[in-house]
Amino acid sequence: MDNAMSIAASGMQAASVRLTSAAANIVNAGHESPAAGAGNHGPGQPLLAYDPQAPYANLVGQAASDLPAALVNLKLAEHDFRASLMAYKASSEMFKALLDATA
Image 1 (cartoon, rainbow, N blue to C red):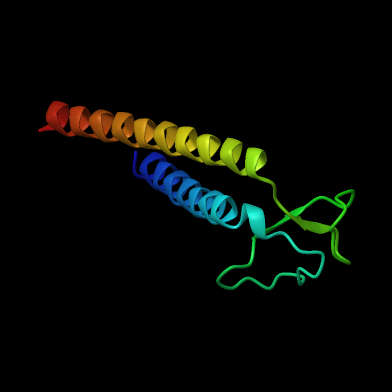
Image 2 (cartoon, rainbow, N blue to C red):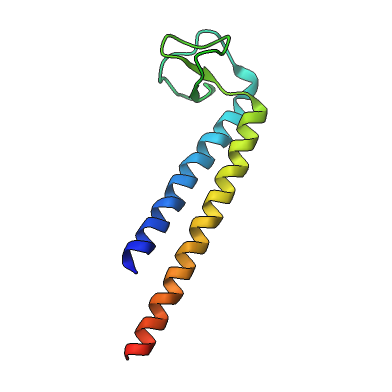
């Protein structure tokens, strides 16, 4: 049971990182520039996503994401977090039932 809880907690953490990234991309969606650095991220700079066909892709094929894609990623991160939370709750309830049955 502990494995299931740790996997679900890891999923929530990954969804949280994805949510933070999507939120930053939404904030910075109007600030795309052809001079975006490879992997450089600071205030006011959009996070980079792999898309070698984008018009502003840098030398490693990364481009600043657009607003619609960032909004979709935000909703996906929300659903991922909820799914992981539900898995955590289910595992917790099963573990509690197991302890109650053996006690």
